Length: 489
Image 1 (cartoon, rainbow, N blue to C red):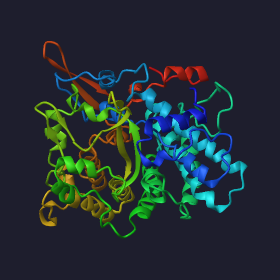
Image 2: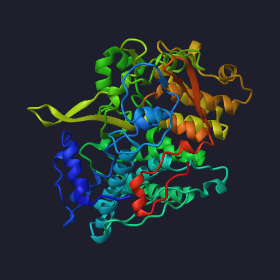
Image 3: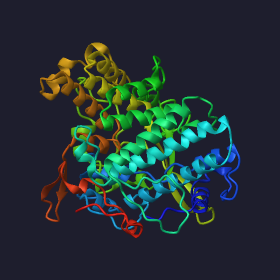
Image 4: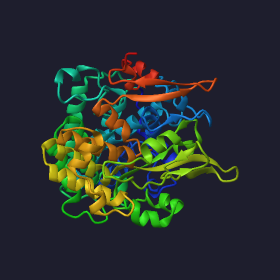
C-alpha cells in the first residue's frame, strides 16, 4: 500500500474536484508551511474520500439481480459474482481503498501540523474534524476489507484488520501491519471519541458545513459505529445529539415535499447541502448513476419483491423508482454532474454528490438500539417517525407500526426480534442504492442470493453465506509491496 504524499493529495483534489466551491481556494502544495489555522482548516477539507463505495456495496448485496440483458460495465460483472477485482477502475474496491488512504494522509498531515504548532483553542474543532475523518475512513475500510466486528465474542476479532495509519509518510514505501479487527476498532473508537469531544465544544466555522464532520455528522457516524459494536445506549445517546426533541424538517420528506417536485427536481434537491437531513456529503468521482441499464442492477424482481413490497406498517414505502423500459429500473435519487476538463471536446469526469450520513439512518439506528434495550415505545416512536415521511397518505390508524403487526408480518413471537426486523426492512427499502444494505448484511449475517441467467436462458442461483471468505473484499494487490497480507480465499 503506497500512501500518496501530501502534494499529490492536494493536486488530486484540485484537479478532480475544483468544480465545487469547497476546493476552489486550496493551494496545491502547503507542505512547507502549514502554519496557520486557516491552512489546517483547508487541509482537513481533503480528509474525505474522493471515491464512493456504492458499486461495491450495492452489487454485493441483494439489491441487484441478473436481468439477462443490459450493459456490461466494469467492474460490475465480477462484483455480482463476488470475484476479486484486479485493477483500479473508477468504482472499484482498489479505487476506494486508495481514496480512503489519501484522505487519511491528509488528516495525518493536518494533525501533525497541529501537534507542531501552538495554534491555541481556535484549531481544536479542526483537530476534532481530522480525528473523526480519520476514524471514519478506517471504519469504512474495515467494513469492506476485514471481517465484521463480533461484539458477542472477542475471540472472533483476532482476524486481520486493516492498517491503521496515524502518521504522515516520510519514506517512499513504508511497511504496514494490519493488526487485528479488535485493534482496528479500538483505534477507531479512540479517534472518534477524542474527536467528538473537541467538536462538541462548538467553535468550528466551516464555509459549507455539510462537507465536513460537524458535531451532527460526527454523532451520526458514532451511531453507526456503536451499532457495530453493540453498544446500544451509545447509539441512542449519539442519535439524541442530532435530533434532541425536534424532528421537524430533520427527515427526508419523500411523501410530501419531494413527491410534489417530481422525479427530476427531487433528485436535484435530495443531495443538496442545504437539506437538513444531509449531515455529511462527499463529492466523488463515480459513474455509478449510469448503471441503471446495467445487466446486473435493479430489475423487476427486486422492484416487486423489495422496493415496492408491503412493509410491516401495512403499506408500501413511497419511493422514486422509475422504469426506463422493463427490465431496467432505478431509484432515481442520483444526479450526475460533469466536471469538464476540456470545454471544446467536452471531456471530463462524471461526479456524484453522495450524502454518506443522513439523519434518517441515525433515526433507524436509534430505533434498533431502543429495541435491543427493551424500550419498545422508543423503537415504535422512531419507526413511526420514519413511516410518517415514507408512506403515501400516511395516517396512524391504518399505517402505524405496532409490535403486534410486526410479529404477524414476520411470523415471529419475540417483541425485540419483530421490531429489529422492521428496522432492517425499513432500511432495506428506504435506503436502496445508497450502499447501506451491505452494512446490515454483514452485521446480521444475512445470506445473499444472486440469480444467474445462462446463455440458454436457464436461471440458476449462487449464494454468499455468512462464513464465506468472499464477503471480505480482497486487499489491493499492490498493497503487498508494503507488507500488507491479502485476505484468504
